[in-house]
Image (cartoon, rainbow, N blue to C red; front, side):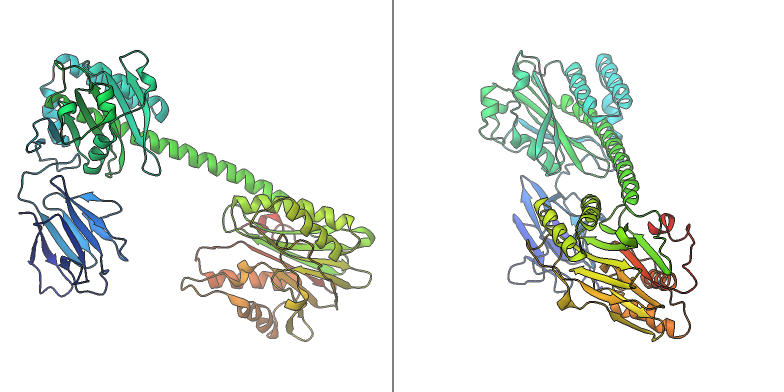
Length: 580
């Protein structure tokens, strides 16, 4: 009688307990009212997993438990057939599945096993079968010379084809060469959603190639159990049940074999059927077809791996091009504004990102500094960032004041259809004649001013003085604020990737981290110029993260009035440093 035997438990006292599987459904969990096998442990879910009997086979299924169910060191993600001596682990409880009935082997059975088939009780037309790798050579040794040559041709042909699309028709052609009695051949693959898709349909009957109907019942059963399947008389097979495709095509005999990857992943199936009564498929045919399926599975898996590799390489090159294009939108040099110093840093969370900054030369010697953050990250955010950079320049150069420029920018982004994305942005107009900065904030992190003389760090605009993010509300009236700059004053503006940067414990850098890096350190003599402030803040964020992955883009701009002229280094603060 099939059973589960407890091998190991956290306490060790109950090892050896046997749970007999005498019914059709056995729920495993800690709920004594609903579970047939009760594990009273807090790490086990109320209904953790279930074992059900289906057509003589026992399948285990995880019931969306917190900690998962493991069979032979593989996490269960779909109903999984159990075979004798399988190890089932639920949290810290280890069981052995014992089945003293005749074993139905799968293609992944041990190398010492012999090939096994089973004839359904009460129905002598249905055969389930699988061929372990060690038994395959014995079957090959008994094949006629013609079939041996065909197998050799199949192996050679499949090994030479590295792309999936031309490979599948070759498999169908090879099957027709080996199984001369077959009238139709299907090579069926599972798509990403697990749907059965006939990729190749081949028929000896004229005009039948366009009909893609096949017995989904047989294919599903074959894939669910990972076993080959043969019915010698499909019309009379009660195991299949009524089938329109079998009736319409007057199908007599059907073989179906699964295509399974080395790790047990189901790739698809191959189906052969015939109308001939005299030349119906036999058990030897099924064994041979299973060997062909093993060869085909290896070839398909290699082709899929190559396709995925080529796709990843293509994507990598496209992202690299996008990265170079995005870097091209960033300024190549700092403004040459007498008595002012600038610093910028940019680090995307992915190869490309949605943070953006720019320096724009305006009439009368003025300079615009803008920094924005597009919602999201990756390619989609980078594309919107590219659009934003062009729109910002146009608005800043055509509108009479920064508030009007941001209002126009907001309307253009809304009319451009940016969907459910939005952009936070801070804009500054530096007037070197009056040493005043006009600030407009559209929902961005409030800019800060560090005053070296006083050693204080304060917001230059408040939440009440800030507007909504760009793209959020049409017709919003943004307002500007004038901020005077003294020698030694530095303005800081950055994206929330700075304050949200986390360490390995999940603790964010927070605004307090900015204050510590800029203000507290300065009290003991740290550099208060824009370059020193910006570089110190970047180093503090990097140290806080401690190598923890960066989950958001980071952009930072510092500028302010200095004595003695700005630091003019180019290699460390411009493009080579901006993108890290």
